[in-house]
Length: 326
Ligand code: SF4
Image 1 (tube, rainbow, N blue to C red):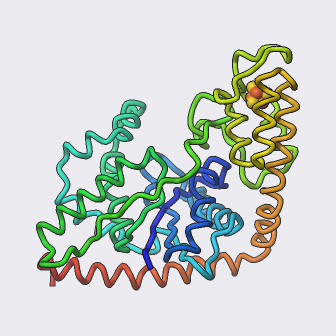
Image 2 (tube, rainbow, N blue to C red):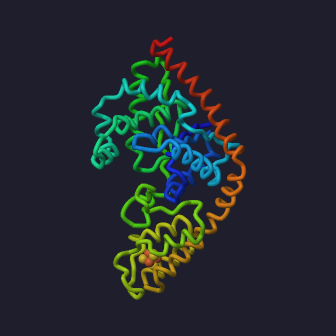
Image 3 (cartoon, rainbow, N blue to C red):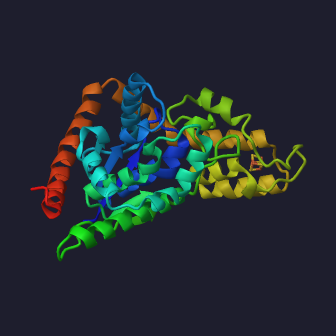
């Protein structure tokens, strides 16, 4: 059975961008492949942060993932810092990665331009990502399009390390991307990708009232100024959310109503809110049960870390032996 690996930063409560862009796909994939999902807390410290908040966010993320449908009976969920081999392998990969390749990464260029002071972790972030994936010798990595360049770098690192140190075997497989079916989810401002740091999200576990208070003023087709103006669904983020949450017949109805000025944007958003409720009600219910079962959440993470430590030690034994460390 193929092995898949994917990680998510402990940014606190999951939002629907994380859910549609990654986690919903993981929930499906966990039944098709041996799946390892990681809360990548080492990746979360490249900017300033508060240790207590990191601790709380790690827990919230674990709870959110389990509530969203990650099932510890069929997949492995763990916290990255519980397996120190991630950073050991990242250090090793530092030594086979030219600086220029890191500097060419689009995400590094974007992030570093926005920062006053850039720490080395921002630059070497994709090396730690390569270590995360290759430590488990994963065959496939579910990713969004914006992560493809980093995954390509992981493949290059695997190839280069194999050429240098593997004997006749390809010790590290070159991981293949599994593109997430839902394209980039835009934020409610319609300007940027949905992201907690942009303040344009809807939390996966928010109440119907909180969701409506965010959906109601959300940006739509800017050319629809009056209810009688026909709109263009494809340019409207609400339409794309319908595609993610509403049944196909409703999506079709939305497109017709919008383009013929058959209804206003508030009518359209009310239907979206209903569709979202159908999907989110069971997730909220699972989250409520998990909040009362802290031992269950801790147990799932501990079991995941145990299994991953065993796999990681095995990989590192092979790495150390091939590199002359023992
Ligand atoms: Fe967007 Fe719906 Fe308004 Fe059309 S009617 S612009 S799809 S919110």
